[in-house]
Length: 186
Image 1 (tube, rainbow, N blue to C red):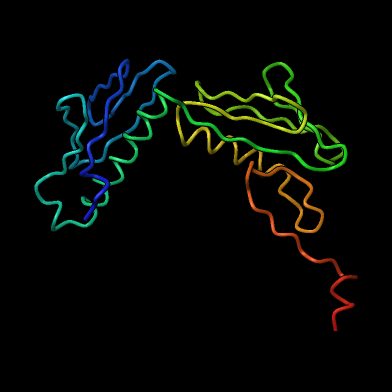
Image 2 (cartoon, rainbow, N blue to C red):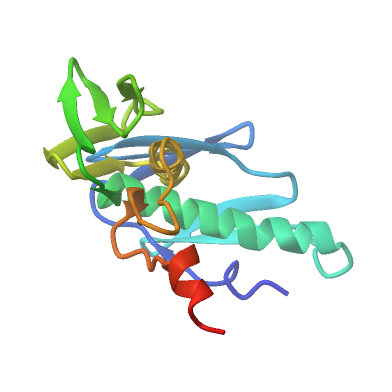
């Protein structure tokens, strides 16, 4: 049983939605997000809140119950994105590792013999670089922001010994002990 699916979703001022052919489009001050609702799920508005309503056989069909909770979570994420936005921050550690913006594209030096470039995914996703060691990905679609940040992260994952590379802000990194330190502990 989905408990998330039955929670009402508040609709902030300035945010509108439309549902056509099971495609839900949410528009707000920061942009718009479109998503496909699975069959067996509908959306109703009551007193400024949205309710995701499952079809009649959701108790006997486990997939229908799962779609109910997932659809509610996706709708909540879309409303949050167009009203407040999503944000992921990354940090770059390492001697000579740095990032900058050139022609709307993120250019990074990550210890390779060449520059590495990254572009945002999606129309409303942006990449900014406040300084040489920080990268900020912002947008309205939670998936697009996460995917863009993950692609930047995968360009040079943190080294477990020296911890050089790109990592998320606040990420706990576990440092491995080197050969020399491990050999002396017999």
